[in-house]
Length: 83
Image 1 (cartoon, one colour):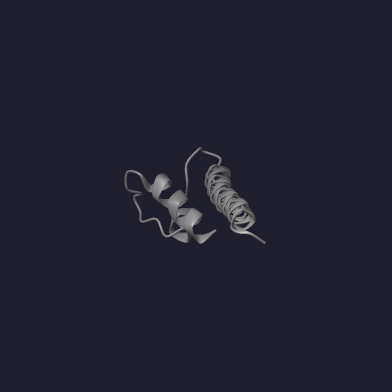
Image 2 (cartoon, one colour):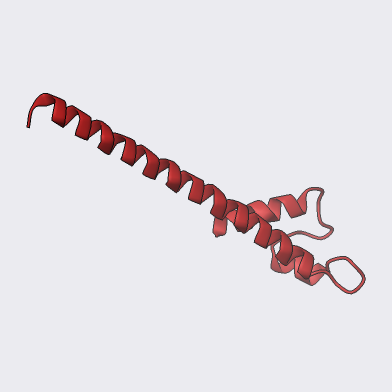
């Protein structure tokens, strides 16, 4: 194997490794987006018949009563990190 063959094969391997890393990052972003979407659906599905959330439901998620501003966004981020 001469130096040209080694260099071109190493470049190809480097490109393939880069593609695999980019693909893995894309998959991680997609999983995170799916986790956020699933968390948002779960939160919406837990609403009471009156259209809100009970104190008990929020307590189960670790949200204090009364729920502070931004509690849904914070809960979605926490659930995403746990996924």
